[in-house]
Image 1 (cartoon, rainbow, N blue to C red):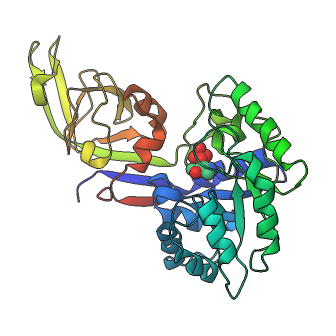
Image 2: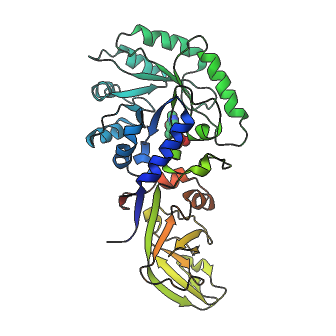
Image 3: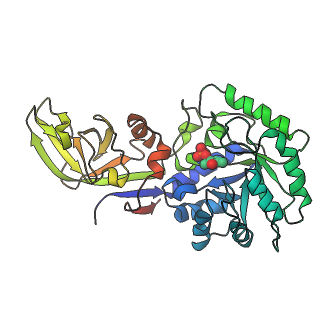
Amino acid sequence: MRPCRADISRSALLANLALARSLAGQAKLTAVVKANAYGHGASLCARLLAPASDLLAVASIDEALELRASGIDKPVLLLEGHFEESELRIAVEHNFWLMLHNERQLAEAIAFKPDSKLCVWLKVDTGMHRLGLPPEQVSDAVRALRASKHIDEEIVLASHFACADQCDQEPALAQVKRFDEINQALALPVSLANSPALLSLTGVARDWVRPGIMLYGSSPLEQANRHSEQLQAVMGLHSEVIALREIPPGDGVGYGLAWRADRHSKIATVAAGYGDGYPRHAPNGTPVHVGGQAATLVGRVSMDMICVDVTDCPQVALGTPVELWGTQVSVDEVARQSGTIAYELLTRMPARVPRRLVD
Ligand SMILES: *Cc1c(COP(=O)(O)O)cnc(C)c1O
């Protein structure tokens, strides 16, 4: 077998969930497993997360049905609600809850006459201007939902933060203030916090929290804090050295010979490239852990391979294990060097990389 694989750590996932739980206090928790559990494998992660979560959350009915097909029976929240009216029947049948965010969804949910009750959350736009009803439409919407005998009485009012990852908490606190004004007369149970909010803001856990990225051990915060420092990497992207050579100073490595040796160098070729989710934009110098030692990426990332300068790692041989990211090299660091965020690297992890559950 090709050695490139993603090890998924059960203990790290459960430790991160426990951290989210402790930050959530009395709030209920929906574990976000959209986008194939941020690339980690939806059914694998959901099976581990579900027993200690109150709810699971995904982005589409297909993702929710995939959870049901793998035997998971927790209720599942569809974070963007339904896209087509026909999904409402499937939602009731499978206990999928809908986060309604626009007038069309609202009208369709109210007109729907199912056999059992439909559970809905209502999203309000408190400043991100991406999804949600405008604040002035919320009380009418709630009245209409409450008037329908087919909608479950427990309606949760939700909103989403635009800037909870930033050091400057002012924009997030302004959203909280707007949200509290909207809910003052309604007094609905509420949900505000994603991972960055849960990690960095106080008083936002409220009734329901919605952590995603933190469960997988990546910190979304601009600046780490004492909570984010406790997160444990869940995915270890591993491979092996499949070729080794020595080159004289002045010679180049890889496509375009985009890196040149300034000394006599030992170059290890590793079986992992952008076809395995490693970012093509990772620059020379990006950290790579080879056989327990720190080394650096050199030359352009190929589809199936990268090259690593192992001149200072004398014991490297064919078959030496390599960590592209995980506990030694954080995915956040690889993302930062590559001009992106861990969310993107993780969710882009392609199907060809086998996921393997480890302790
Ligand atoms: C994806 C998502 C989350 C989780 O966000 P993280 O930053 O990964 O914690 C929470 N709420 C909504 C509505 C989402 O779409």
